[in-house]
Length: 320
Image (cartoon, rainbow, N blue to C red; front, side, top):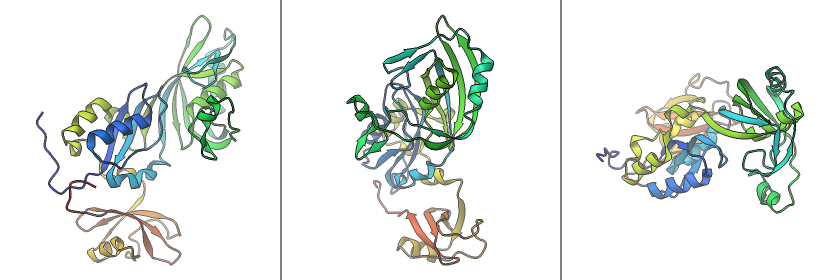
């Protein structure tokens, strides 16, 4: 394989858009990437269940400091919900706990029920989830027979589109396209929709098709990612660290301001350089006059003053 490496001294950091296969956990993907690239700092942006496939953004090196830039990003999924069968885990991998007759269920009934979940609504996470209480994960407690009491919390579904309804002898399969915000559980939607219809339901298949700027059509299969990383070709497939922050304001500052930020000091960009009205806690991307991404600054309580929130260093080394 012919490989064009990154220029000597380029810090090993960035984001990868990985197409996760079914049967693996998100941590499995992180482990494979960490081993292949030889970098300790690797993390993912948004857990996918083992059953699920689809886009999984993975950050490595200093780029892991900007993963939280994707927390509020919109996500998109395509799921198949099977009605007439309820499972303990709300997906096809769990034990069947109830079945129901679906002979009366029609597309109009499903569409009307689905519409109730558009917008902001309370949603209770599945008992089998990665949520922690007192250091114990919900799925561990559920497997031990002592499920945690998880409270409902507000989530948002920006769009829920009914794509197709298919009937079998005893169940009804429903394909749905979902555009949602953070903390949204597709498995809970399947369970709650089944409850609203009175027939139960679970996720039979799930694919994440978008996380912020990362789209499934651009994602690279994990096997291919690992092969490229193993030969040092990470720069051929990596996105820059600021890809997770493209919705934030941007400001260009001079060399003196860049040096100040890297030393932990606050700066005062020229009036109007940052679009948003100054308010404590507002953040912005920052670039030097050479176009290099410097990091993220945060507005202080002092009008016009911005302090470093997370700032990159540029060392003459090939490893972070």
